[in-house]
Length: 138
Image 1 (cartoon, rainbow, N blue to C red):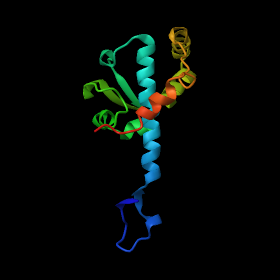
Image 2: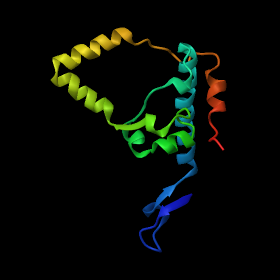
Image 3: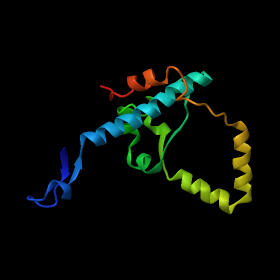
Image 4: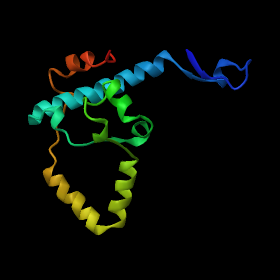
């Protein structure tokens, strides 16, 4: 356990803000799953990661992770940090837009015609690729 903040010099560990081995392991699993998804989807559509124009880091995790850190831990492909944007709660915002606007709802429906679902976990090479991505670069 690595203590990040101790409110008082004699504070008990449970009263401190700390980073545990479990926290690191969960980050590794999330990072490996996302990085594996990047690789497999790029291969699936024949796209070189360098061709990606913009990456949106969404949700609370994406909001608190800098673009440079996302690259450094191997979460996203090595791109210019200017192409990586912390987007916040885009799922919640999108849900509000669709609920409040018939035009946005029609746009979302039209987008469904362009999207193709790709099941990654069923791929024979997913687990091997996932394990390769568990380590942090460097």
